[in-house]
Length: 411
Ligand SMILES: [Zn+2]
Image (cartoon, rainbow, N blue to C red; front, top):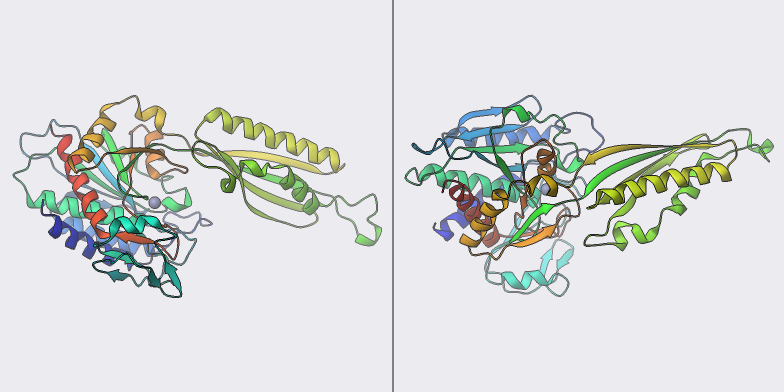
């Protein structure tokens, strides 16, 4: 593969895709949660058709699935899928993204609008001296999560369609909405997939493979107090706001996202709202070990009983909702899924590093539905922020991994 040509193409695609505002909305119950995601999905639908893929279908919920048929004689090879998400995180605006392109990066601090991307603070920049770096202009995020993944997959597909002499099995291309809301797979038409295994291209520094993720639960805690005129409140008012605050104080700060890393899980109070009579608290629970989630759910129930005891007449209810499961259990049952990925990465010049995700991906959800779907990093830094940056050399190398992965399954 011609690295410079791949680099030029993946950059051109990346810049085009990031300019489409696709911020998703966690509060919406619709799929897709925002209209902007349609624009990118339709653009990709057209491009996949133009590349000659068959069965290109964008459904009513913005799931885009397309097939590249197997080369002749390869129809029996396992079908695999490559997957990425079209939305971007809502943490920072993703509208009117104006990418800055720094060619032949000299290793010095980069001005990003009124911010500075300084290699003393972000030492990974020094590994990309001489490369082309894409940043924002400081007013938005860049959207490399996950448009880097989309650009890599699209470039890999284009390369495969241009090289019919290279044998490969059937390939499914899957682009999904709303990954960042955690609900992106809720309406996924799994029955349409034929893949034995899928691979998400999403997030993180190049060279990483992620086959373990958090188990994720959301707990909603509802506090009900008892209201009376504040002038007559002595001994009678049960204040739901105070109850919620007392509950919050029992959540151990040593088990928070800001106090943990690696395999340590956490509680994260995500949102609190309410008034004297009724208050609600939303808590995320995350852990690679399922039994630790159960322990934390029990602890939240115990905190609820303790708050009720301290606020006679008040009541506290804890409800739990599973969000996704650690994909490791399903993936390890089919060792080829990881073997092929390691082979592809090695063939592309990487020494693959295993990394446990402190989060989840659409792949975790698809794995739960029965299709093992590890993740490989799409090659980006400072995701979800104004200081997001992407080295174009990484995009090109990961594109090569995508091609080599398809070829590895044809062996
Ligand atoms: Zn992502």
